[in-house]
Image (cartoon, rainbow, N blue to C red; front, side):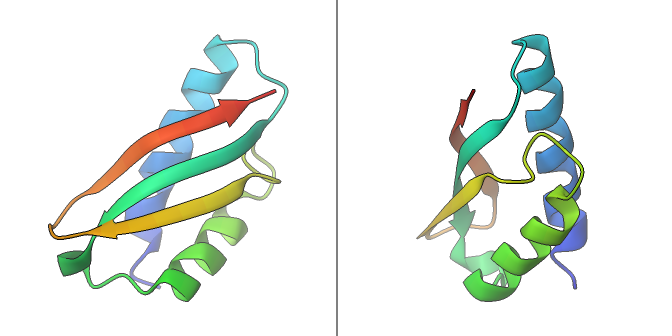
Length: 80
């Protein structure tokens, strides 16, 4: 799961921001993923779900949009 090192900081960063905002949960996460990262959408989403267990992102829907590039960007996220 090479996605783990990509996803962990995303979950941590969103969790910290959501906590500062007083969120009870993160409902949706929208990521832009560079095609050159080698990420496969199904594997990425499955790894995200596993790593999000026990966090504010545990039940979040993950939306992934691919673009030409090498980065992963948090486009936005919705909180409750």
